[in-house]
Length: 404
Image 1 (tube, rainbow, N blue to C red):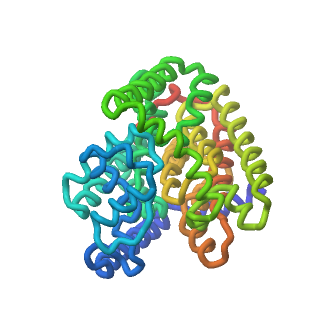
Image 2: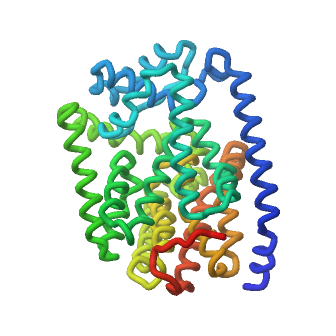
C-alpha cells in the first residue's frame, strides 16, 4: 500500500503546485471580473448583492450604528434593512452571530457598500496570508493559500473565515512561546463559538492552563463588554435565536451543496434525520478522541495544532464550504513538517484532496445532489493523525524554523 501512495505523492512537486496554483488564481480573477461586469448596481442577475453574505454584516453594522441592535435577530427587520441599503437586492440573509460580533462589524456601514466589502475582504485576507507567511517563509505558500477554493469562496461571499483561520492558526501556534497572548487570540473566537468548541478540552488535556485561563478570560471579557455597551437583551435575543440555524439546515433552507458536514451528506442520501445526527455525533466523538490522544502524546506542538483544527471541522454539522478556509492551518503546518522531515506515504495526496474538495464537492453537489466534501474532512483528519503518530519531536516543541 505504501508504494502506490508514495508514487502518487511523487506527482505533487513544486513545479506542479506552482502551475496549478497560478491557473486557479487566474480563474478566480476572471470570475471576479465576470461578477463585476454582470452585476449592475451591485446586484447580480439572481437579485443577490455582490459579496452576498457580506450584506448581512453591512446591514448589521447599519442597525448597530443607528441603535437598533435588538432587531438583528428579527428576520424581517434585518432583511428589510438589507433591501433598503441596496435596492434591487432580493436575497434573505439572517443574523446568527453573538452580540460580540457587533463590535467587529460596526464600522462597516460608515463607508459605501462596495468600498466596505473590498476593505473587509482585503484586510482579513492580509491577516490570513500573514499566518501562512508566519509558518512558511516561501512565496509559493502564499500563492497556494490564495489558490485554495475555500479561500476564493470566502472572498466571493465576503465572509469571515479568513479571520477565523488567522485566530485559530496564530493562537494555537503561539501556545508554547506566548501562552497568555495565545489565549487572548483564541478568545476572539467567541464570535464563532462552534469553531472554539474543542479548545477548552484540548487545552485542559494538554495541560496548557495559562492559555486555558487567558482564552476564557478574553471570551468572558468580550461578553461583559458587549453587555455594558448593548445591555443584556441582545444576548437573550441571540440565545432565543440559536435553534434557527439548525432548523434552516434541517429544512434545506440553506443550499446543502454548500454545507460540507457528514449530517448533510447522509440526509441527501435519504438517511433519516435522527440517524444522520447520530452518525454525525459518532464521527465527531471519534475525531475528538484522536485529537485528545495527540494532545496528550509526544507529537510536536505544531502537529497538535493541526490536529485540533482537523478535528474541529468534524464536530459541528453547521458550517459552510467557505469555512473550509480553516484547512489552511493544518495544510501549512503539514507542508512545513514535510519540508523539514518528510511526510508518511499518502499524506501529500490526502492534503491535495482536502484542499480541492470544496470545489469538487460544490460542483458535484449542485449537479447530482450528493455531498462529497466530508471526504476532504476525513482526508485531513487522517493526514494529521498519521503524521502526528509517526513524528517524534526532533526540535523544541512548537518552534517553527524559517524555510530556506
